[in-house]
Image (cartoon, rainbow, N blue to C red; front, side, top):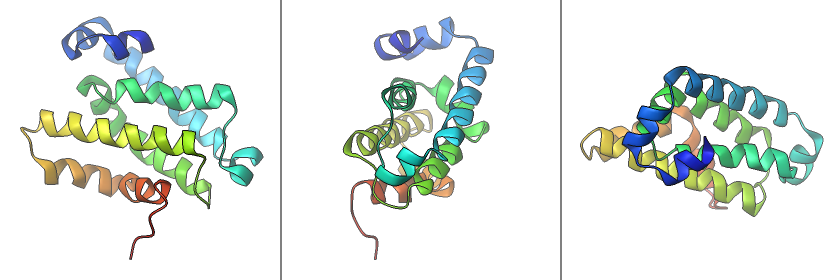
Length: 144
């Protein structure tokens, strides 16, 4: 599914992956992020075990597809990703930060395309979830 999301067109992804499968994937990601949020290594270092980083990176290719973003928004995926970021008080590792930034970037573009280029509406969704503020923190920028 990840290779399909990474390489295929949005039309192919939407036609090939049933929404019920996307819902199952989103629920799995949310549950795993909740578990990782309590992991001592994550809390102490901001780094993830390889398999946990792979799970986080599963979101990256899907963020380019409306069929995933629609379910991710509706099922609280952005909020789960935000809570995961918040659980680590300091800046996450460069690998984790990079993944989160790419997810935000691609999700923003996907939302913008879906809503006819409406940048404020797309940013509003990401801001309401709290993810936009966490991305700023991941970049090491202190908001004023």
